[in-house]
Length: 141
Image (cartoon, rainbow, N blue to C red; front, side, top):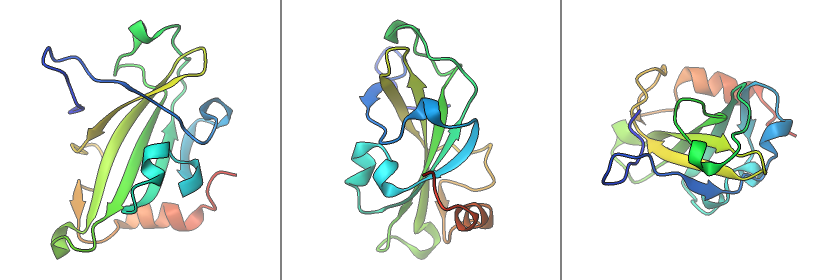
């Protein structure tokens, strides 16, 4: 996983606020509305979709236990760059989320290496797999 690392190679985790209670979501993929996304995503006008995949992992007891092996959820963020080259208008990023037992949430990323997904970091249009998922969702209540 190619998330942001410090000089020693440690993954950098940043505390974030998700406008949706992560623990109340069922395991699986959820489409988040813009009002439910992480606060910084709401301020970026090019963010056009946010998918959250909740994993079945318990919260860790403290921040000293944060790692990329047992993440609570994965966010796939879609950004539309209207002024970008036609073959690179759609951009996709992966972020890792890890919850702590006291309710705090930490994010690592972005990760542009999406080799395990059916689309790449740059696309000319929204991939069919995402189009179908977004079209069938009314987003998380």
